[in-house]
Length: 493
Ligand code: MCA
Image (cartoon, rainbow, N blue to C red; front, side, top):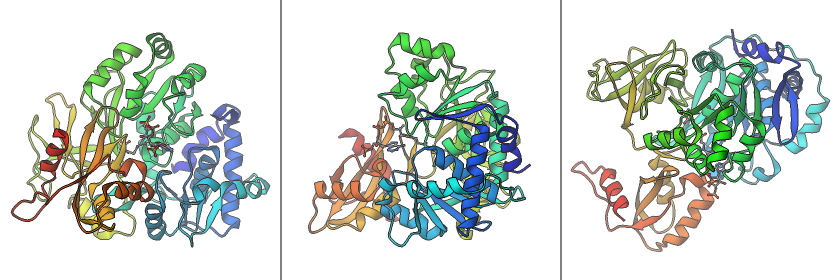
């Protein structure tokens, strides 16, 4: 079954049921089917052919969803762009993915580099509404690409993780089974749909199981409790920062929400055991923590019915093989014993097909026997629960968004007044971590002006919390910057 067959379970099978609420409007699954058919016809009429890319730079909205389903139907590769990205970050994705068009809105279009074929949703909606309401979906193989999801780049610029129909289908069916998702559920969806968490877990479990969604344009701490009380969801997927925000709920509100809820899931960044415990006391629910990546979607999950172990990400999802490889084992074949730390290697129907147009990076990302090297470190308990123990790389997780120091360092080094730069993550109680930059000054150095340029040129979550001038970067004998020393220094100040 490709994704179209899976989506037909709801688009056709639950046609008359309420599917989606967004900003006061309600759509049935049939409405979504029709709207996505019109979008698919619009794409075809505009010259899109199989395997062309549609870049989508939009906040959560109905048209984003309709355009996504249309891409699946017309075998077009959906390429979402983080709405917090600015011109330079977007330019890289546009150059790399070469989309035939970039769908955005008037407000965000100011950030899109000139020369792109920009479609503002406000302008194309009338045309889309005129298109035929029937569309016969392309026959696609499960290995066909459904989406290119750009990951923050370990080596500077981001790479497009090429995800197939089979990847999304495997992820959705595993989660539907293991988390008991059903048409009786109600999901408050506040995650951005441009990332795998919202797109792969939110959108796909919904369109394959038929529950009702209230979609929010974004998570806002000021109004999220009212949304819970008003919509009365049974399921919520969030990042740890969202759970930190929910802990501000008055006890009676938390209890009222908890009474309706069936399942809270957390992922995208480690959930502190203390947050899990405080949340349990306040809402009466043990958050289910799971582990995934853009390249693989979900890999491990705490059990729905068994023990949800604080600090652990649980056990492999169905069909997925996990190997904890000795970090010194070059071919990744030597496994560590239970209780010891190894690199998480992953094999399964969820694992992506490779990085878009990057054969060398793709080859490097897999072992000779076909396991994906996640770069994450973990240990396994004797009863099979996995606990993450950090990263092999220096990834910073800020509010559930991935930040690679190298990308910010490269940006800083292009600015006036910067000879060298090193970026490290510092702990933050709400965001998990935040980036701090150490800069060796050159002529014209001005920390305040540099911060302004970062705010203009980088997504807000990548902007360093502060810029600290330093005489020289600490280096080891091989000349490699010792970021861990800077991280210790950053925490001490
Ligand atoms: C945050 N901001 C946004 C959005 N989210 N702006 C527009 N749309 C958004 N969706 C901006 C704010 O305007 C503000 O910018 C800054 O970010 C902080 O916002 P604030 O309201 O203070 O945020 P918060 O209450 O602390 O909550 C932040 C958040 C956000 C909503 C939790 O961090 C978030 O949405 N995280 C989800 C990330 C995610 O989906 N990751 C999945 C990656 P300014 O500073 O300029 O005012 S996929 C993944 O990791 C794998 C597959 C996995 O396992 O899931």
